[in-house]
Length: 305
Length: 133
Ligand SMILES: Nc1ncnc2c1ncn2[C@@H]1O[C@H](COP(=O)(O)OP(=O)(O)O)[C@@H](O)[C@H]1O
Ligand SMILES: [Mg+2]
Image 1 (cartoon, protein in one colour):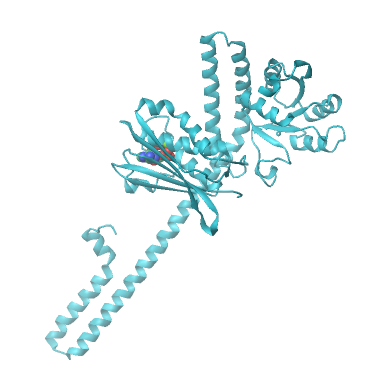
Image 2 (cartoon, rainbow over the protein chains, first blue to last red; image 1 turned 45 degrees about the vertical axis):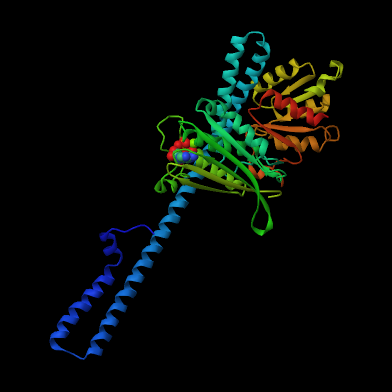
């Protein structure tokens, strides 16, 4: 329980305090007129009980109001995401088609220019940029309720390793060591591997950004028994970075919540990540010790959804 | 790719692409024909695509879903309902797939595979290879 200031104490227990004061005042008057000792005690107790009940009532009302406010906020949040998803779904078709034309066109140029290293480099950069744009659209699409996932049954380890190759350059640049611990014989997961890849790219990127001076990126894979006996795979991504203060951790899944200055950071990473994990009927939790590091724990159900 | 390398170009496979994006059809045709293992037919709408499919009996059809007038889903139904074309494998090559359009296992689309645009050439060739084999 967090420590309350004197003022908060009074606010929280105000009526109880009033009751006690009433008793005091009553006692003082009564002392002067010197009533029976037992009567005085009885009345004092009654007044205190009265104050206690009123205070409890008010406290529980306050808690109920806070609860509805919280669910309303969550609802507004998911509505905001759904609206974003609907816009994304509408735009996706119009954006992905031209991107597909660019990619196919560039692929042809790549074959035609394979003997010219300079031009080949240009075409490869164009293709990479087109695919990056596609990734952004894909991320927004993960908010959409009407878009189908492309589910396939597969091992998760290679998908994680591929996500790792996307951030390879940054890992080396910042001298971050990767520590992998993959348990053998893990069950296969039914997943949309593009989306799961995106989840881990987001998590790795966050971990790297939290360790500008280097550190250790840990990836642990193990089997866990889910509820009702269904097996699941647990993935723990940890870093030895700056960590996340308590008051911030509640907001990190909010869309557009970011503490970073760079324009590449949209604050959508974790909210997209959560959307994808939810769609796979998995769970995601974040634990952090400010100054020491952060752990993201994801579990995904194995086998048929 | 290896699979196609073993083939002599004489046994070129015919691929029909049906998509209202003409430039997309054009570039896919260029790319696939460049490999020397494919011959590519293009149609920019459903009815033309069905005509070509019946006339040329391609080894595989790449089919867009969101097209004006006749959607890819309707084209696939028509192809499945026609004796001449019912066994030709179809890969849906499309920008997005709506939830209601997919089958129960989600990655199957009425028994057909789908690939999302944009797609890199090697992945496209890999999926075509897997289907024709
Ligand atoms: N591994 C981490 N270590 C420290 N802070 C983190 C970590 N992951 C996320 N955060 C915090 O959560 C915020 C939201 O993350 P995210 O949704 O990925 O958006 P972005 O990375 O664009 O800021 C970040 O701005 C950062 O403050
Ligand atoms: Mg991020």
